[in-house]
Amino acid sequence: MDERKQALIKLVAENYIKTAEPVGSKFLVDEYRLEWSDATVRNELRELEDEGYLTHPHTSAGRLPTEAGYRYYVEHLMEVAQPAKKLKGDIEEFGRSAGQDEQALKQLGKIMAGEVSNAVLIAFGAHRVYYTGISYLFAQPEFQDMARTVDISAVFDQCEERLDDVFDRLSAGEPRVLIGEENPLSGDCSLVGARLSDERFLTILGPLRMDYAKSLGILRYMYAFLP
Image 1 (cartoon, rainbow, N blue to C red):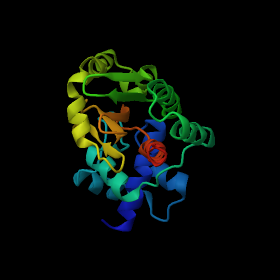
Image 2 (image 1 turned 30 degrees about the vertical axis):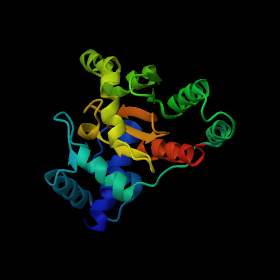
Image 3 (image 1 turned 180 degrees about the vertical axis):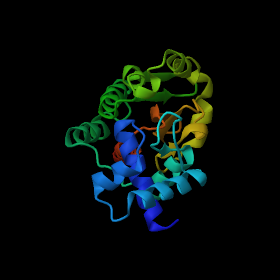
Image 4 (image 1 turned 60 degrees about the vertical axis):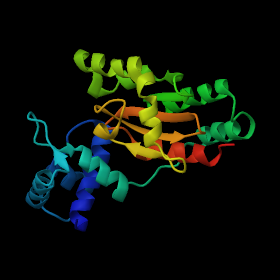
């Protein structure tokens, strides 16, 4: 993929993640003072859509990433974000003094959920799971429709049955990003997760539009301080 298309995928992904609004060519040209014309950017966005990286709602001329677009962004374009200073301190304290304590891990999960405004799931063994931040997840624009909220709520009713699938897809050495259909919990969501031990894992669960850079940065930092 050439540099111009890469730049446009990055801009579309990061703006859509931030605003939940489809991103148009005129906005990109004006907002970022691009050296390319509106017509050129529009044509490039159309080509990216034809190639499967972008799509657009029927009611809007703006674009948003597909699952393939998010995957390309995460693997090739995204700059992983460092956690906020306060969260770094909480993670370091957890790693130093309470890395095997369930209550401490649950409290850290609550803090993470608030930081990323999504749900956090922590598995303790094959059939025991703790989750927090569900209200943050349901407050996301994608889940304002009642039917979609009901569908996503089923994730938490069924998650114990799918823990083994999640565990199998997480790496023992590096947090992983599972997007949409890659996610055993729900194809309508993405997750960023990490194994914490042979039996434990922690995942951040959010919409396809989740802030992958921030979530991955938090879990990488946490992984570095695991006991």
